[in-house]
Length: 161
Ligand SMILES: Nc1ncnc2c1ncn2[C@@H]1O[C@H](COP(=O)(O)OP(=O)(O)O)[C@@H](O)[C@H]1O
Ligand SMILES: [Mg+2]
Image (cartoon, rainbow, N blue to C red; front, side, top):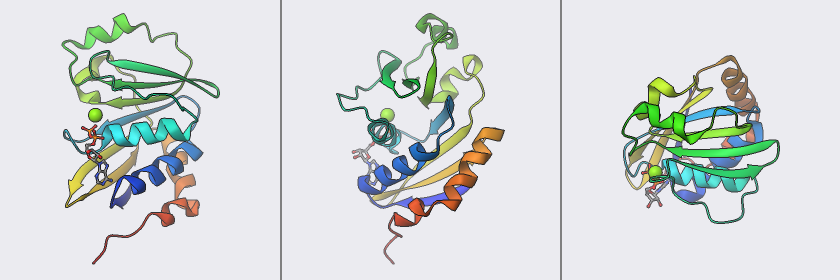
């Protein structure tokens, strides 16, 4: 488990860049946290780190937004408004060559989702956010090990005393 304080959106962007730099191909990431915890902010910064330059739309109503990236597509899902986990079947994502899957509110579609590699939990902490990264697969453990060896996380500012 890796814990990190994110004082502002710039810190969230740094985290996204660190995560993107080491993501395994086909990485499945579940983003947990209440409304306003910063899930979409992290997802948007992550997509930017992968070179997405156009508008990053919220998938709140479409459930999924897809972006071409190196090695396939990045998929950004938000299952907050999903009625039934079976709705995921209608999105036709089974055959997608997903280079990255970012899923907000995965608990709402849990029955239809494959196992994640990484669980990201965000929470409000004063004017900033706290994040916990937990590996959920062999690939996820290797990913976090690589992150721990990379000085990029140390560039994220510590909380002010
Ligand atoms: N690390 C951070 N520090 C301070 N504010 C943040 C941080 N990350 C996101 N925010 C702010 O929190 C608000 C909600 O973010 P959002 O990503 O939409 O949350 P969620 O998708 O979890 O509902 C936005 O106004 C955003 O600017
Ligand atoms: Mg959101």
